[in-house]
Image (cartoon, rainbow, N blue to C red; front, side, top):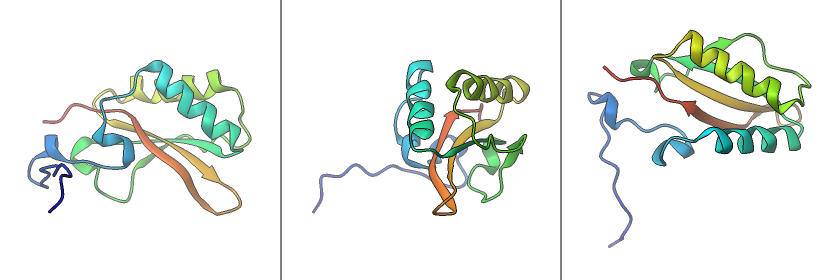
Length: 118
């Protein structure tokens, strides 16, 4: 058959749950998060920050951290909002989105800080 690795994930085990592309990789460091923000800005997408409790990470609804940062191109300002959300909700997952005005969807979506699972 296939040599692809099977990620053993179950709803009952919050440690095993995977979500979005980067969740299968180790957590991003500060430079990698900055690179992702630079990519979002280079595409002209609007950054947005969301958070939720780890137990609710598979739900479609995440809490919005302030409003999307429409037209923001300052990478440091975006990074500061991501970190402020993480500081305010240290036990929650924090997700960064790049909202595409033209396609009317998220062009990028990634969990940049992972909360502690119970």
